[in-house]
Length: 153
Image 1 (cartoon, one colour):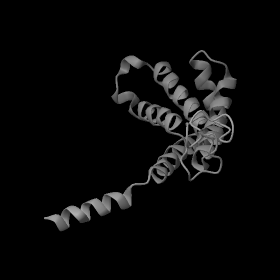
Image 2: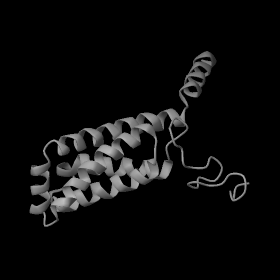
Image 3: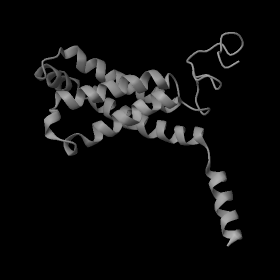
Image 4: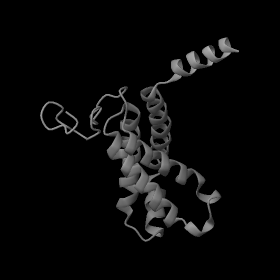
């Protein structure tokens, strides 16, 4: 029995990698936004028409399409993860309300999932596997000067 317990403990310690988990989450969320944005860019007249139908300017369609492409790529690479996490979370929250929040959870399942994961990444940060990790390991602050202004020092 102790051997099994030791093996389970070894396996769980081996699999413990917060940064690797964040990388996998960033890649999956980034790919979803990147691919949806790419589709929007290739159908921009339809996207602009959809946003006009919702009572917004056609420029909002252009903005959302490019936000998803640039932000999705940045999310995958770990660049400005917290910033794009907040922007994607807000985008999905607005999408739920624009398309009718009264339609219930099932009609908005993907938007709600992406909103929560995006806000989660905004809170958790990018992890160490990123091209531009902005959060301080000591205090969590964005662009913290670890040498002089970090409150954790």
